[in-house]
Length: 336
Ligand code: 5GP
Ligand code: MN
Image (tube, rainbow, N blue to C red; front, side):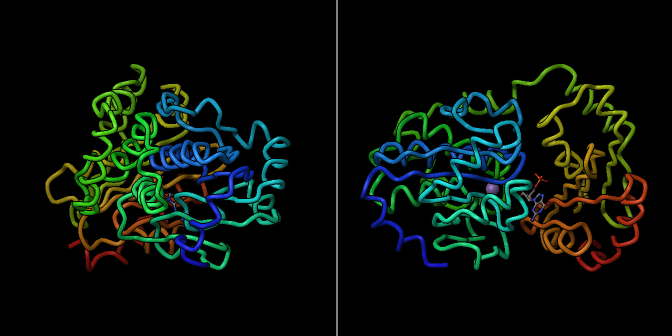
């Protein structure tokens, strides 16, 4: 993988067909960084399209440009044609190619240049022709901002792009509280404010735009599904399918639930597993030295960052929970 800087000179010849893609079930950073790049490449005279491997949470549907995003699962033929024809394939906010789910064969067979922009650990660098991978970065949105500025595009940042970038960095820094929130993050936000960003509107869109059922579901989950394992400073929540149906929970409604247990004094690890149709989906959040990236990688076929990772299992909910209890002692050294 060559450094992203080596790619800058290619940007100047307009008219390139570009696919921008990201991980399945894109979050605020995945969608925000993809759309910011989409706006930027359009401003340079290229022909980009954002293709998401799956559908996405409704709370992202305010983002400028999101109505143009293709869902690979519902528009497969059209998406595959665009992927096959693309000169460039930008892959944003994921480290392992499996994160694009059913899109993987199309992406792997495409003849275009693959370009990675990502901040997760241990990326599959051999898969990409160019790229930037930096785990010290708060978000992929910050890296797209750096890319735009370093390639001479700072003046082309519009209020709409600023909203997308802000949504990404705000999502991935836990509203600017995680240690990844560097002075560069705040400098970037200051610049976005100069471009007209109304940050309070982004917070409203992302956090204050749900239906009653989601809040009832969170109350139910905290009351009935939360196991506090004090001797390991850990909280586990296992959400059965019956809860998902009872509260009519859809993509995005469960996001953020995993963060609540960390507000309990002394808790260093929060784990949540949700019984989805195809698989059991794990989310892990931790504090300090507790490395959930390694834990998810080793035991739950996943990965992510040291303090925020995800994984999956094809076992039943009961079985995967049993497995969690069995492997939790692996983290004893950092949890106690
Ligand atoms: P979340 O718990 O919000 O789904 O994900 C937390 C972090 O872990 C995100 O950075 C996400 O990209 C990453 N992640 C989530 N699930 C997986 C997975 O199955 N595999 C890998 N490699 N990373 C994941
Ligand atoms: Mn991210």
